Length: 128
Image 1 (tube, rainbow, N blue to C red):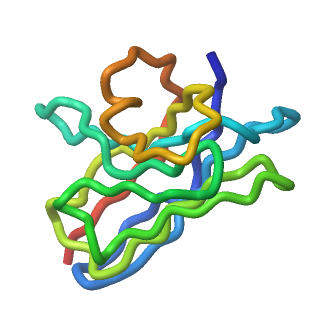
Image 2 (cartoon, rainbow, N blue to C red):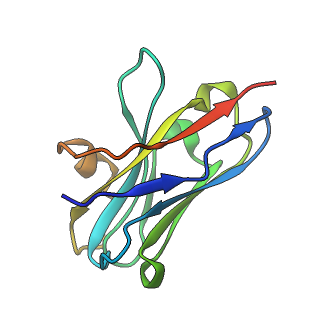
Image 3 (cartoon, rainbow, N blue to C red):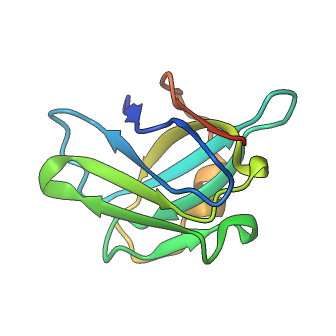
């Protein structure tokens, strides 16, 4: 399984924005569906967003639709998560996961069904 390095987390005020990065140095991510997951203290890990392995089809959890935007740069082996209008419910540690799925398909549920090896993640804290 791929190992990612997540970064970009920070402490922000409600209404603020952040851009998270998920890098896999030296790994060709073409064909991989890549997702962002998050886990808050005392809660289960949940899928937030996913981008398809081909064609860049974005898939989002209802709780972040309209506020989060996922994108990928295969040349840089990196996936991004742009987050705006952050609120305290977005406070969590954010992680990446991937599965080789070279299709133009919505992938969040697909990734959520499989086990993954998690990296260290990056902490997002939304608080005034």
